[in-house]
Length: 251
Image (cartoon, rainbow, N blue to C red; front, side, top):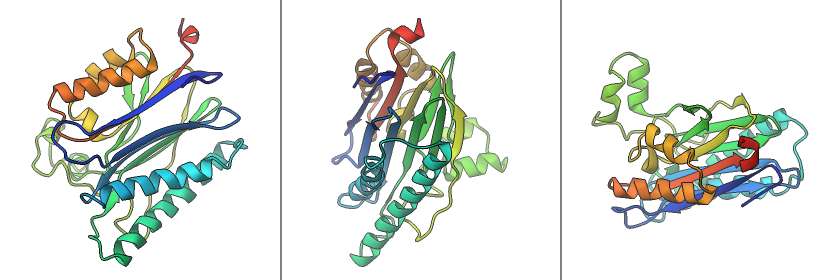
């Protein structure tokens, strides 16, 4: 979809090996052209992960739609904190009221672009990137292998093959309360890209960058990324969202 300042696209795909799709993605804009981008990767199996992911997305979406504009970046921060905590409580309550597994949960990466600021929250292992002269990851995985790496117990190269690389240290819905950080970045003409692990475990960041900087439409780039993930095995659901300024602004 095109806006006054740029265009965006988002897609989700079941992949090649899963029976259900527990991922969700969306991009929204308000009357002031503030942009909200979300991807979530549900966990817990059928009727659990997909529900958790949809609850998280809907919680932010419904509140965002009430805002014609944000007064400043601090209001964006409050919006993100309030709604992510609400989503966490909703998922946790649903799981325990219905005797569902306590493993019902979801990752979330949410990004708001307001004027020249980018405000980002990431919980779990979905990722966010700024794409300029290179692709720059702006989120840290809340994963066990990332914890081991930060503690100097494994090397960077070992992270991709470690047997516990899929274990998350944090996700929405696993506990009644959740702590997380909100990050602020300057945003000018950079592309903003977010995705679930079904993409980045199948497609290298180098390949992502090549596709994201092609002279093609935003929609085509997203489709090419999904195709690349599936060609490399498509072992998980794939979700992504891309924002870029109007093409003439790049020239």
